[in-house]
Image (cartoon, rainbow, N blue to C red; front, top):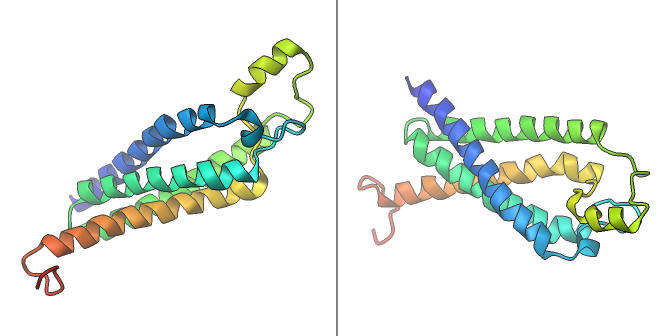
Length: 167
């Protein structure tokens, strides 16, 4: 029965991370100037946006997913659930990233008129290939941090722990 709890924990952590990502990355993208989000000539996502906005949001939301997974899985299956979410996040991230790269718009899809230029802010930027490959591992790092946060907090609160704070 522990495997069922682990599967539910992995799914819950992944869903919480995705929902948190949508609620934080979309407003952050709208608050940043469009020149900071993408190169105006090519439409490719800028390094500034990747390192200052996207990766911190990815780590933050993955920490939330790791915490949810660790709490839902319970003490018995916590480590397996965290490893499961890390693997699931890497596989899904690489799959979705590859699909976006293979099926995404080409560089010739830049706006050609003023009307299209005003709607260009709504079109997501083209991610660099290196970012598509590395971003799932950044999320996995966040899951690991969130899982360790709960593991260490639970160890600190348990009465049988010898290394508890104040002991």
